Image 1 (tube, one colour):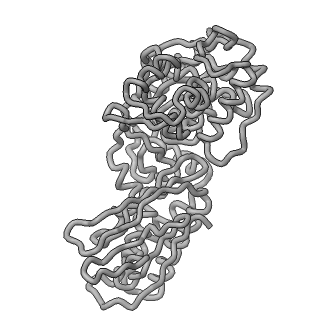
Image 2 (tube, one colour; image 1 turned 60 degrees about the vertical axis):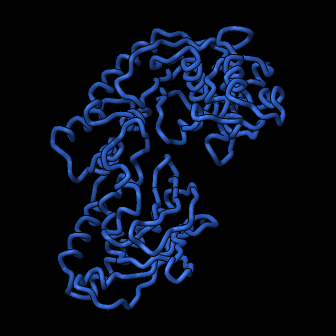
Image 3 (cartoon, helix red, strand yellow; image 1 turned 90 degrees about the vertical axis):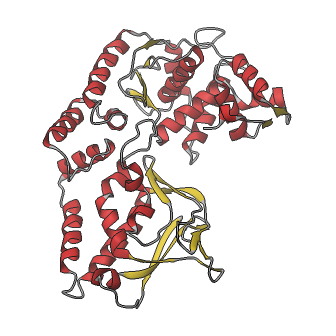
Length: 428
């Protein structure tokens, strides 16, 4: 099992809050081969692998943020208020210390990220750091167990009935939703809104968007918007789809997709890399620069349209990689077109695709595809070997392959090509 949350009730000294006292427990979180709850006590200089907290607070936080934990994707461009509070376990302590553990959905999986942390005015510090991606069902089962155990613990006495009843009512409300209500809750969470605390006007806008937008793209389109931009995003999608109908596709892309198979590797970016290498090989491309429509590379027609959301970057046609993209530099536009190709080649059937800056598996795959398709690691290695590469060298390689210097730097790091000497220009 890649993630495990173990707890054990303890007999703590009686405190004024009966529910805190009754649900006091040791909590240990193991993620992969690491212990998220690894702490050092600076008074005793002793190390332990657990924290002591009232699990009631953890359960309340889980229930309050349940839909966000599984459906609210991360994008720093949107600056959604309260995102950290909804996804960082440390905010659940209510005065008690918990690790800075971020729980962020990717799509079918969830990313766990934790870091070293010395809380202010505290004698203990969290000394673990790392990240891991786990299956959603696996983590969800672990978190459900905590909520259910807290409720069972509180049912053993009539004391603390107010807190128990509030938690039980909220937990039952989640389980009692019918299919339509679950869809709405997912849609609201994608927009960063609480499905149980939402204005009627916002609920109406979300319901209309969900009902009118193509199911193949509505989730990532909704996640690319905010409450203020939702209507504009829907209008943009309608216009973009009309524009795509006018754009023609090179039929060679369709033939290429029929020849390729999405790799079965676990990580989406690895799938993108492998798919790009296969595509270049089938097209008979060596290590040279790619220009769409030239030197044997099929054309990728596109249209540039201002986008209504900072993280929305493009829409890809269902019938091919033709795309409507946000305004970019020449190299930035080439990268988005390459992402459109990767999105199209990795599909299992005909359906439009969204390009955005969200932290999802689909977007990670298309970004990795574009980087490897335009600036293959093998070609970079042939030029650099194990040499040091300063900013000038990296920028020159970017000019040669027609990509930004950021793409070159990340390709070098991700594929261990040469040794990039990175200045502040490349640090993100």
